Amino acid sequence: EAGVAQSPRYKIIEKRQSVAFWCNPISGHATLYWYQQILGQGPKLLIQFQNNGVVDDSQLPKDRFSAERLKGVDSTLKIQPAKLEDSAVYLCASSLAGLAGGSNEQYFGPGTRLTVT
Amino acid sequence: AQSVTQLDSHVSVSEGTPVLLRCNYSSSYSPSLFWYVQHPNKGLQLLLKYTSAATLVKGINGFEAEFKKSETSFHLTKPSAHMSDAAEYFCVVSDPSGGSYIPTFGRGTSLIVHP
Image (cartoon, rainbow over all chains, first blue to last red):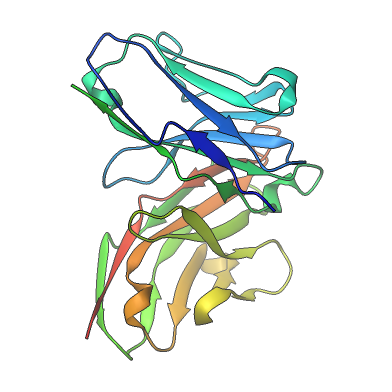
């Protein structure tokens, strides 16, 4: 089975520019997650989707970050404008949903390493 | 609100000796608990998970973890470390405190294995 796909793998931008990341989850996975992982820290959940609805976005800096999951499959995460502190790896993950959603394993993509200069 | 604490940022062991990576959690519900591993330049991979069945959970590569409700702990162990175990390990708690299961990662423990 194909894994979680992310692109691009690397991105370098200047502060105040905008950037977008794309994620294609495993087929049939209703739940999709975006994480921010700053060097030396654990992944921080930015937003969680169930199909095309938002389950949690409490840690998403909504003044500059946005995410969508049209049609409940692919997802994009956008940053506009970027700041130096946004330099991190952005991870996308997906999992099966349902009543046992909490116990379902997350499958992670390779991540996008963003450098803001 | 749920939370997870990984008590050690780094653990250093010699090859062939036991491994202990400590994790404590806080949850008002019966949580699901996970350990993930992240090797350098590789994606996160599930090692094992606890979901209210057996309290002693066996995972891949000889790792296991024991859920202890009284101690709110979920420590990860392995009897004998291998060089290939050197990686970053993350403990994750997930409970329905917000109406849906939202995962929270610990800060990670870096396992260093000496020959």
